[in-house]
Image (cartoon, rainbow, N blue to C red):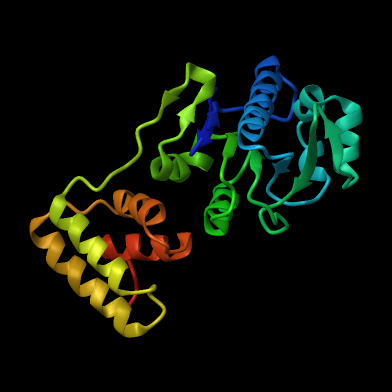
Length: 235
């Protein structure tokens, strides 16, 4: 079990076998909610956005632990799309596509796509993540090295580009191009990494994490550059 806070957490992750409510699930969501509130209090924010993979009520219904942590009355109001007063805050339910704020975000059981969307928004100043499966949050953890508040506030090691020459090549590419939308940009990136792979260790996961964290590129552009670095992108 983990719970992560970026720039701020993860509330732990463990593999779960089904939608049944387990005490650990309720405890994780409660801890995530308290953490999101503490961050909001510290920053002077008044809203906590409960973000799920879609904005559909079913995303809050899928796991009984949500009602167990929030209370059935609060969960029912969130499912109905209402803003809910809670301990001096306002709780709102959204997906990444409907989120329009820079305030505290509590992401419940997010898929990798949801976390990528949150990264692309570049708005949430605090993202508290309660994961369902470790694999769903792996790339996000690698990029941000969040604090695991479920396991003693330990900061998870983020991925960094271990080879200095590769890092400098990536920084040069990302600082002189706005993306890979033009064929000439993709050719240039392919040529750079083809040379790098001959004499350097090129890790696409390290490159993806670095680009998401250190540049203004979108997660999809970071994914594409990582594939090019690995020699997998199509010509």
